[in-house]
Image (cartoon, rainbow, N blue to C red):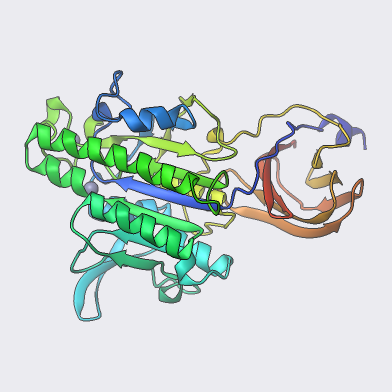
Amino acid sequence: MKRFLFTLLLVSFLWIGDAQNVVVVIIDGARYTETFGDPERRFVKFMDSLAHEGTIIDSFYNRHKTYTSQAIPALWTGSWAGTRDTVYNGKSTQYTVRPSVFEYYRKQKQANDEKCIYVLKYVSSLWLQSFYPGYGPQYWPYTVSEGSNDIEVEQRAKDLASLYHPQFLWVYLADVDHAGHSGDWSAYTSAIKRADSLVYDLWTYLQNDDFYKDNTYLFVTNDHGRHDDQHGGFRNHGDDCQGCQHIMFLALGPDIYKDYVVDKEYEMQDFAVTVSYALGVNPEYADGRLIDKIFRTSAVVSHKDNDDLIVMVDGGNIFLRLGKSGKFRVEVYNISGKMVFTDTIPGGIGEEILMATSLESGVYLLRYLCNGEVGSRKIVVLP
Ligand SMILES: [Zn+2]
Ligand SMILES: [Zn+2]
């Protein structure tokens, strides 16, 4: 009991609404020096304004393979386990070795495919998600591959959002990379400006839809950058130079810090892990780490009766006092984004509950859902 008291840590009152939807935008091949790495943000004025409503990471990197065919699977899976060649529906393509965040979401949330939509321009042979045992094609996203440019793709994303209200929407914008490979600087920077305005337009559209308003996360990143000027310049990419490796990361959402820049370094494999956390699913075969620094979970001890949930930690045990009535679902994630404990408690105000979790010492994020609302707490289990 003694230890129980001094390991008490916590807890800002954090009431974040109904943070259930996740929208991802991948801008293919924008170099960091043309996005948030440019002090003037000349080509990303719209995302610069969004950054004041959210968090960017200044040191986000693809440290492994800076080309699309391996980086996109890494963004999907949170792993660099890579792809395998196959023939699917008569077409040569690749599939990911590890399950994707789409599959984690659809399986674990028992979501039908229209709740999980992947939108990109028309490509003749789509890359595939995994055939991993227990996951696989029955959990792949509803994939809409139509149109020929970013404007059409974003329009399609909006149409699908209003038609199906997917909880998980992943939008892939390919034009920046294509323009970069042309070697035409103004075509390249114009494509970035267009993608920038489309991200803003999509976010604005979603905020005007009651289904998404105030309960949606937005994550924007790149699969790779482009060579810096010492390694060939913006036309191409694919090696380990700073220009190729350094990419952007922007997050917005109800419990994401506002107007905040994370200076800790994170890597591409962390992306799917963090998206999984936002979706409340367990990326069990991913290798990345949870980007916990973007979430507002800072610890302030509070015992106010109107707190919705008071959490105390005693060794591996978690003690909860409920500040509201309803069914509490509690999920504890380790720093790798793996859900290590979950329980659902039918609770009443003031009820006190001890959950034996046998957690090892370390930092965890505890996420809870009650009456459709979501909150986070950071907890520390001492040795
Ligand atoms: Zn690419
Ligand atoms: Zn390079």
